[in-house]
Image (cartoon, rainbow over all chains, first blue to last red; front, side, top):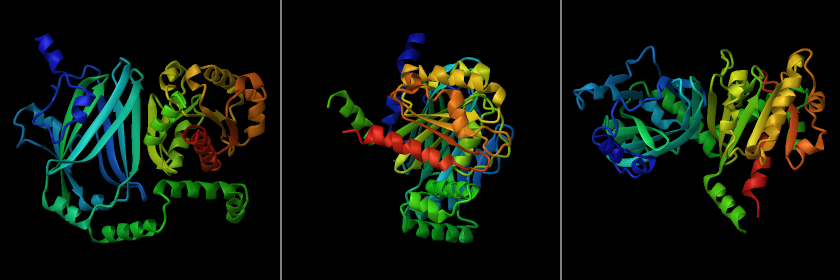
Length: 241
Length: 187
């Protein structure tokens, strides 16, 4: 039995080759012996820090989440979640995701996450991040800020029109061993898009004229702050640069 | 040619830069990290692990690691040295009582083989606090004139205030430029 489970063990290379969402789960729910606990997750519009989605371990489920009891009648429904996001999120130029997790009282040597997103069974995004070493009993955060290439209006309409056909598999590995596998399905609610979409559209247009990514704008702001501190004018500094 | 050019190619393809922020507890490492992207700094707890921020800047993907500085955690710092392109050492310039410990911990890091190639940015933080030592005074305390210790290393020491944001952008810009000149442009 033990031999069989070893042979079955799934590594990062295996999941990076997947071309569509898995049927079911590639590891059992009891595979995690490292006591990993996800404490908080949020998605933010980085340009104005508006929070689109936030969940913490105390609230467990909020009204944007639903267990996927249609696909899984057993306990597996707890690791397959259906999310509803405001459709604005599809228009955001810069998104920040923020994850907080705790590890058990043993150190973890090499912790890695791979998340694959599909739309109608086609791979659209792959995230691969190595956390590496985790200190015993530590609480750790990972914030990822990234530019989102503009989606065509047609694709956005398709995604809104086909709820739950955007699907993702999230895999967590310790070393080469898969320890956690979660599934998500997404639906985009087109309600209340009007104003915000217009605002984002305007921002995008502004950005199109320049190659400066959003993060650099923040740097610019910092630079101005520090210039003010030193009592210098912005003109002086730009000459320095 | 040889290994160096292979390394260069790999780096160019990924354009990933790994920056490690270390320093004693309460030096302001997490505040600096959060300030860089304009996040709120109102409720920052002592870091009992790491905070990673991944962002795009000047065409690079920066992976910035802020690891807790409490004494019990310092023993784990070495687990984060691998593949570090830049080290940011944060000093609480107003914590005169611990400047000697601060110097010793930095000296330890400078002796680490895995950090040998990393650019070093020293932030003399808390310049907004009354009684804080200036960047040049911190440089003396840390022994930056000790040529043996800082030999062959790209070093910059700068005053900053994580609370006001002053000095942070220039510092990080220096570091990213220094790393990109060193790693990505080698030929």
